[in-house]
Length: 537
Image (tube, rainbow, N blue to C red; front, side, top):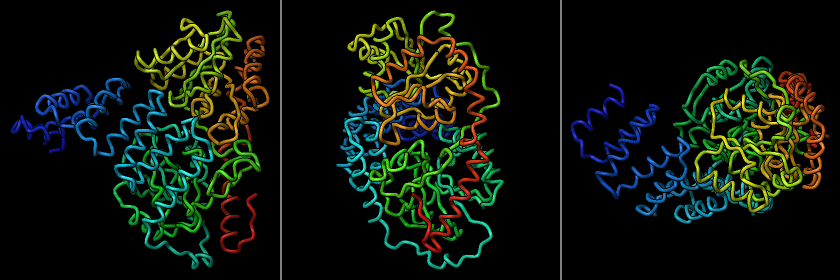
């Protein structure tokens, strides 16, 4: 008898047991039966109106279905009932971030840290939220990260030593990968073709997934690795011991301070060389993390080095490739040719739409009075109203705005046919959304800053070789570039049909080229470890 059926039997026998009813709701939720899960959570609340876990679970269910206002109400009620439970503050903070209320989310996580200041998971959540909050300077975020690193180090009684490995005669370097995103996830699109190529190369690849969630993408990833060893159910020391005993030469963190990360494992130093890469565009704060992998477009030489506890390792190619789904829709004509006006757009998460972003976008819309703006990934009437209010107070009529809720991948890609140019968010730029836009023939106008989060668009646009025409270095230049392209519809039309092929054929983001560059770089790092002579600058 499976878990769901067993719980159904238990609830039938004890229909007034609120704990069992709540657990049955969770079992339905895990099984994807949302309506049945909601019914059981509501039943639990009827049975015990002061039972906080039922409110919490119902709120997370509403979050899953993008009903953020209801999710917020449920979590606020749960906190009212149990103000001592740290996770409730974290969950409510996640909901507020989805609603674009990043500063309020940060305050909530600070409250959680007051309750449990030693919780590293909450510290990671705080850091992820902090880099979305424009009120935090990069230097302040660095200090927050250093605090995390110090706390993680305090939990380690002894680190692993690797002097003996300097005489290791292994014919192939063992590369370990710690990630929760080797599945259908925005990060996986940048990694899949690269790991496929690396798996066919000179390394022996070890995957250490941090979640048991699997899908079709996971099954493909499994074929690229020689070893697949989930660490989701292992404590940090046990996971670190497993990695050490596997004899890993170079260990990669692909999460940083995002969900399902296992950064405390790296504090044990289970591998002689440890590198953070791609998943989180900022420092981990760990002294035990030796390098952060970037490319020279994303992070030019001399820029940002002081914002990392790691040493920046710059590639001559892009720091990631991009997966092109087989069923990508065909490129369409620029909609401005049939509409007679420009349609700008954005599909970035609401958490990235800062006051600076509103100012930037409204600067464009006020300079081009007949243009419209489409915002995707906007779920809920109240969120839409809040966004409208931000545009209106900057002089942009709400009638010029077009909203779409989160769509399935195929419908989301087709929606690019209605957009002429994507306007990037600032100072946290789009990643996956920008890459998909390029592949759909829609150029992205981005404002380059002095941090990794603000320069993601730069490295993506460089792959399509349009960085000179779509990367701005000031607000005024951003507006002027938008006006230029609004007055050049035929040139925009021609570019539209070139972008996908440019991105596919660019040598600097070709998976094989990137893989070979990484192989070369990692071999040099290993020589440096054995004979410290290699300079990464």
